[in-house]
Length: 429
Ligand SMILES: [Zn+2]
Image 1 (cartoon, helix red, strand yellow):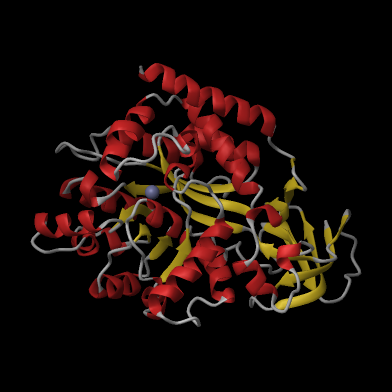
Image 2: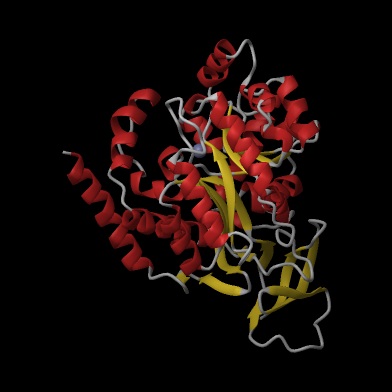
């Protein structure tokens, strides 16, 4: 496909106006201000539109779309224990598949081409990812409340099975190791997962210092060690780590994350909804930590809208830091694209660069709330809505265009997801 006369966010995150991008197979084959001489087949008129790298959502529990808006208005512990966990017990693989497809449809329609997920029934999530045609890093949530070993657990068997089926084959699916959190595991499990991840060369996806309660109780339990220090003492940071939230990290934790090259998934909407607080993103960025953007699951957000996360990330950093220069648009867009891809261990996507995967999205600037255009990047990060995405291309294939889902029967998906959540509620009583 040839995108023609389109504004392009180039690999330096500056703008090429009325430029050309050609894709061939799953790759970007041409980027330039001049019309290429080669033929790239179908053309796309990009007049009044801007082409960005596909967005990367680095923290999600995609099947939780089934619980969107369910049992709201309770304090966090009651909401989880009385509403969310009992509903999750009713999940089946089939329900997870429809919930995943629903969440992926929402993400595709808002420019997301890759996401990192932590949940269960992973084969059913992967089935949805593959049908949709996007990419995902999948981790089987490891939660162990008793003193058993990771190697003796069901989670270990399931992670190994996932690795056997998917790892090292097609790059669309990558398998990550997982420690759900400090408070849902024990020292032996954490140490064993860390060793396992390093042996297999897997990144570890975990929740870290999301709430003050979690952070302070960890310190009480472990001789003053913060969740980051505790994880480090057990070898977690000896390999790549994707740490979600990091709301309550302390200065020494930030130094540790930077020194170890860990990535953070900043989930501002979820942190606000659950009353968790505001992550010190500007400080983390200043110390050299890779900060990326995630939505978290739809039951704690309540959508999977990366544009909303970008707006919130900027407003929160500037408002709490008393500094309007923090998180400028180009940095925000990097966090939501190439930095997210690198946090997933994907070095061939996230930039509009020849040879990179054609993971792309187009935003239509011909909307009242996006005019005039003094600064495209500012409009993209402060004015644009998810619904301004008019085309999403994943791995060289158009998966969404102008309200039409090319790989998913979205009407059926919505109906089946609706049925699944109703059935779960019925089974509860
Ligand atoms: Zn989460």
